[in-house]
Amino acid sequence: AFLFVISNSIHLLLKLSTDVSSLQSLVISLSNQVALLSEQVKVLTVRVSALTEENELLKQDNALLKLENGELRSRLDSNSKNSHLPPSKDLFKSKPAFPKSGTGKQGGKEGHTLYQSLSPDVVVNLGLPSVCSCGCNLSGVSVVKEVKRQVFDIPDPKLRVTEYVQRQAKCPGCGKGVRVEFPQGVTNHVQYGNSVLAFCALLSNGCHLSCEQISQLFSDLFGQPLNPATVIAANERCYDRLAPSEAVIKAELLRSKVVHFDESGLAVAGKTYWLHVASTDLLTHLFVHEKRGKEALQSEPSLLPNFKHFAVHDCWASYFNLEHIQHAVCNAHILRELEALVEKEGQWAAKMKELLLELYQLSQEGTAIVPDLAPYLLRYKQICREVDEEEPLPIKAAKQGKPKSSKGRNLLNRLSGLQDCVLAFAKYQNVPFINNQAERDIRPAKSKIKMAGCFRKKEGAGYFARIQAFISTARKHAKSAFDEIINALMGDTFISQLYPHA
Image 1 (spheres, rainbow, N blue to C red):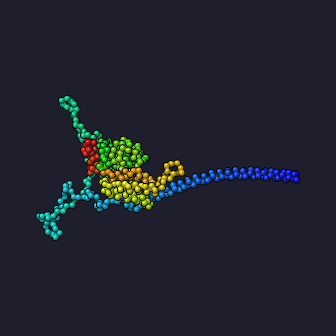
Image 2 (image 1 turned 135 degrees about the vertical axis):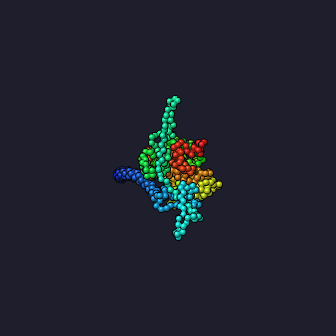
Image 3 (image 1 turned 30 degrees about the vertical axis):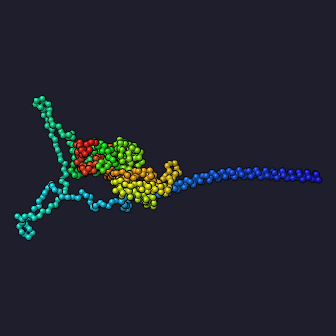
């Protein structure tokens, strides 16, 4: 019995040993499978992570594509009432950016009607016929009524040639040669007078004709060929003689409480330069610079480094780097951007547009202060908070760069950050609602490019800027630009008489 028990125990031990070996093999196999599964999990984890990143990038790309698609659609829908485009780009006639008062008279402009002159140059008396149609003799018949009709016409254009003869002699007492000097400015044997030079400068800068066109017109009018180089010489001489007038204009603009500023691209020698303007309803200053931003605004020809009052301009960021001046932005630009968002059913844009137009009317179209502005400021801030909730946050691009914001978000940033500048017209006297003054004064440069082409040299663009600014100032004072250019060539202008203290 003892041996039987021992035998069974041994048998059991052998069986247990076999089972342990099997278990060890199973454990090893399971360990290998666990290791394999761990590797697969790591691979899958990396793959899931990569797919997640790829999905996020695709989401961002999709959002950017939607944003770009919206911008392209807005470009297609852009016109003069919801963007900076001029009315000539409109497929259909659009309404103005903000309502007009509607009080203007219909028909031609006042002051452009032709009236009979009280002192005609030539009077032709037609008299009476000698015999009536019935055969009766009309001699000695008294006149019972006179009817006057006047014809305004141009006399036959003709160049007037003035010859100066200088006589020289010797003094019988001392033997010294004596003579009367030629008039000032008469320096050559043959030359054009100041009227011809003023005519050329006015056609070149005020009427925007090219040198070749002026030469052809001169030949057609006077039958005398004109070298195109004469036009350039006339511009150069006017530029030099107008330097004192430009200094006076700049000094007066620096004293003004409100000045309008703007800039526009100008083609010079195949490159894009910038024509900068500073103006009021009576004065205009223009200058040309290679840059548009900070470097140009703080350059020597610019008024802004020394200006300390209200500057009305668009939302170009470089202006706001000048912290020593007071800023007022052009709300016509704001209204056009709001109108574009209203067309996309932007609720907040409609509210903001309504608020600005309401303040525009309360300020008597930007000419008076709104007495109780506090409720409108609360509405303004509430609308900005609504915009912050409605407009999407900036989208980070897949590539490196600044996160891209929607047009609504960009407009919100300006409205909220530049609240005082946007509402300056309602807070301060004589601060206008729009910057139309500067835009009108810079428009001739665009006409110059369209009619005469680009400037071949920077000097020519500089001539145009100074002469055009003087012509604009003369017309604002109801002066004849032609007569004033002649006076400038002779060394005196109306500006020095009107502003003797400058």
